Image (tube, rainbow over all chains, first blue to last red; front, side):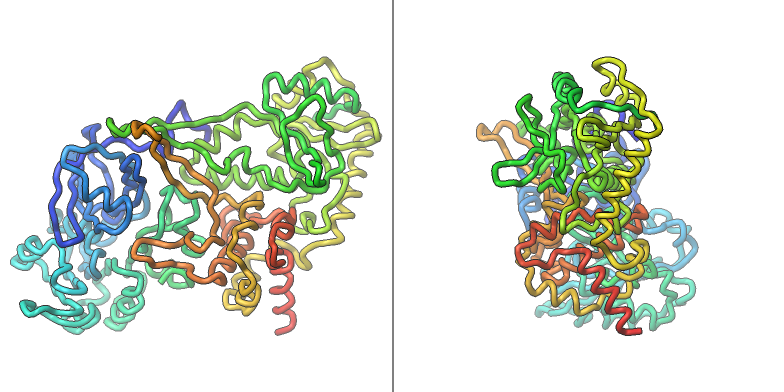
Length: 278
Length: 348
């Protein structure tokens, strides 16, 4: 297994920030283009390591759908730490470094012909959007598409215009809620679990793709199973601190598994016995 | 395995010759009595009888701080850095060879870590049968009393003035014979080496885990909720000393810094440890292992189960370094495993 010539596992390749778009006060959408002109060739649910030299490197889920021949891809990122703050300050045209894609992904083939129930909490919508867009591109290959989306408050909602467009579509349904409304909010109020009674599903034919803050899984996996969805149909994405992306540095371990290699997307059955998972 | 008999007086000139090509490191006792691997000098007195070196040898493959990239801030480009000096480690005990063999497997698994691999490939390992066993060691009870891979030569002292030397690799043979042919070992010499190894193993057997080590993963699985974790971790200072001296701990952080002229900079990795409070901290101040108990348990699960699940060996070679390094006396894997084993027997 001797490495050939001077290829380094840790060396990023160049990409350019081509477009930046504010999604909320703290979240923006960043479109990058690989300088090598090749498609990122990621699968929905995978992540990349993004480098801003002099600041650092951090993992981000890809938010766009894979598309053959398209060297562009999107990340949606909240301003929260050193790398993300620096990213928000970058001007279009700036070069960054990327490694990856890394990790496991939503089994889009297994989902074929079946219904998909998306359960998205807050920024969890970002990686799920990659899967959703993939399925919408291959709409005929999938059954019903149902999206449950919970956000803390209307101000923190992201992809607002795009969601409005999706709500117009007749070949999918979106149910949205906010924990705390403002005076203009006309939709559902309450945590995401309040949406479950609103949807009718055919449980045996439904797969679940769930991403949200750590606390959300505990409260949402139960209602999925209460609806009769087999546990082996439930897929979750668990995020941890990742430094290497290769299962070496130890930071993202969930019991004996590395979230960066065996995850971030896990079949619920595989992580249910792990005390550190959810 | 081919074996040669090498006289004591033959060794200094050999080391001198090797040192022309390699950075040669040998066990040396310092003024305070601690043994450490240090660069060989003609004046160096090799601590032939050492029981354990204070620091492990992982630093030769995974340095405490190692550059991974050099970057140019203006151009936003980066070049990989892969340093791998030719090095020869002389006098490595079998449990430490075992630890390096484990790191080899873990760093090669999946996507190979090239920085590690290059350093490893640039290293010649010369093993040595121990003369003494540290009071804190329990290597013979965790399957680390002998190794048959990972080294180039293996020295066993068979008389005050001679060694039985097995050569495993062509490189090892070439280096051993670099000053000319040596006599092949005779059958009685081979027997003497065998006896020597058996004798030291018998000494080591006096301290150990009290059950077959292969049962450890199952034992661990039964004890996730044991009160032991809290009882021990109550005294934990979260200092990370156990991790730093451990020959099989390999967790690292990746950081970077710009040069003072702000034109370029470097990204490096440095040793990190799952016992340190910020190890599993993520954005938004969420800590996946907020308490010392969580971290303490995680470390022993890595040693006793998670590593085993990956490579079929305990992630502990029983060197006893952590026992020595821990200032509050809680970092003894043997005590942890034995206590859990006892708890089972008391329950049944």
